Amino acid sequence: MIFGNNNINNTNENNNSISNTEKITYTLDNIPEYLGEPYIDINNGVPSFSKEDFNTECFEHYSDLDDKGRCGVAFANLGKETMPTDEDKRTSLTDITPSGWQDDEEGILNGKSLYNRCHLIAFSLSAENKNKENLITGTNYFNISGMTSFESKVRNYLKANTNNHVLYRVTPIFEGDNLLASGVHLEAQSVEDNTIHYNVYIYNVQPGVKINYATGEFEVEQ
Image 1 (spheres, rainbow, N blue to C red):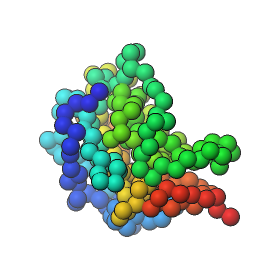
Image 2: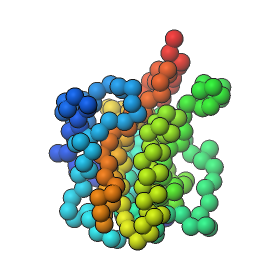
Image 3: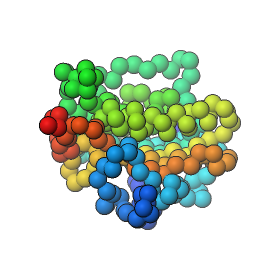
């Protein structure tokens, strides 16, 4: 279920400052190392959508993969029209290999694999399951402790307010030619009110695991 043109550019160059608990301002180019929490606020949690973005027309835009097979910005105006119906079923993603993917047959996380095939915009919000332009390699910690909490809040809001909409933009951040994203920049804002308003950077890390972001290879820290 894709609405609109799937070839977009991220023009949000002037809204990349973040603040930590000490109110030190950073940019997306000098985000601090992982501080023990799965995400950190950007711009004090205030998203940076333009006035023109606020409308009640649902859409979904997914960037074309780049020459390294990496995902770009995913941007949507979510509503009940974009959410899956009873006919929309999730299917296995094992035949999709997002950039930076490395198999973990041994399951280094107490039998669980390190990596998940992570939707930039969750299936529960977009009905997009096997869309390669919507899937990145993410750690279990990134997916469960980071992304899921924001996705759940947006999903619950849309279910409770079935005629409302949420602007939702997820930008994977790759350093240089790295195949594995260091994290994602996630922004969300409810259109009809201010119930939903997030602007965060979510770290693609796994406590206790050393990751090579150039390739996605990993090893347990000693």
